[in-house]
Image (tube, rainbow, N blue to C red):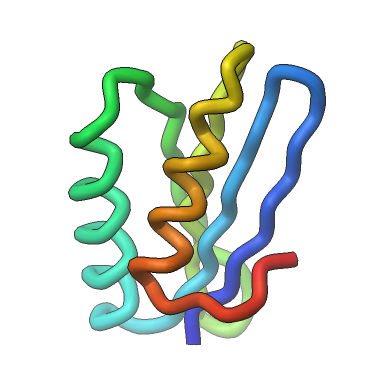
Length: 86
């Protein structure tokens, strides 16, 4: 199961997607890459290992004055069929 967490401050937004296994990793990375390629504004991306053999992909926008990231994050969440985002 893919878990999502969203954080936002004045001009900063972050979406973290936690997943387990190669299948979920491919699904998340493919989805994110496909959606981000449609937009001019580019985020910072990084991934790291977390507990229980899981990994997390973090998508961060800095200086997002127009709040474009909200639309992008919603599209990612819907595409991955995530029902709950903390």
